[in-house]
Length: 84
Image (cartoon, rainbow, N blue to C red):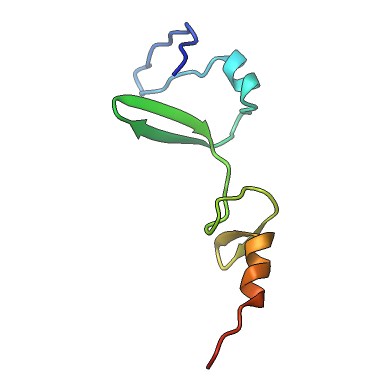
C-alpha cells in the first residue's frame, strides 16, 4: 500500500474528508457511493461500481428481478435448455 502523505482527522460524527486530489484521481463525485473493506488492520475505501452477480463484470448491466446481470451472462442464460 502506498502512502499519500495526506493526514485527515475524524470529526465528532466519525467522518473523514477525502482530499480533492484523490477524488479527482479516482473520479469520485459528490453523492457517489463508496465501498468500505477491512483487510487485516487496514480500512480500504473503493468507489462502488455495480457488478454482474455471476461474473463480476461491470459493463452493460441489465436489472433482472432486482439483480444485475451483464449482457454476456444474460445471453448464456437465454441459451440454457431447461428440461421439464
